[in-house]
Image 1 (cartoon, one colour):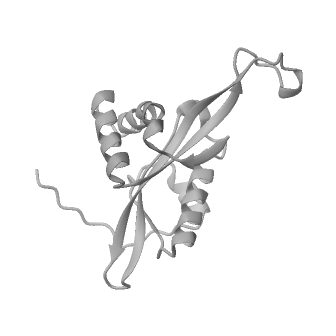
Image 2 (cartoon, rainbow, N blue to C red; image 1 turned 45 degrees about the horizontal axis):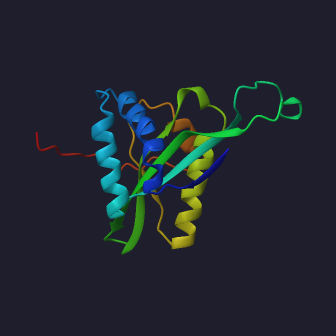
Length: 163
């Protein structure tokens, strides 16, 4: 498995993951709209997206040392999307980790942790204040966040919707 910053060339690999993420949150599947949304984010540099790939030996399920030599393929298995925000009080930049999704067939393999660690490294490199995570209170990934040092912040619990 490896992780890298996503580019516009990763759009088609990201679309099914992003659509799966939305379906996880009880939205209707809409790959065309997902493609358009992601393309706009990537084109306008509105967000930072990391994508995780798993390598697999195509058509050969034997352990690596016993494989037939068929070509390796890469499968996009997860992603995280960040949006830049600011703290006026501390006058510092932060990221909101708005999306984190691992394909169901690849969960509990450390991919989510690896993606979050990439984000933490980015924050250190860019001298960001930190990372805010927005998720449902029932999301089982909260255990992962807490294990990785995130704490619940009681100041971040109001929302107003236009509809």
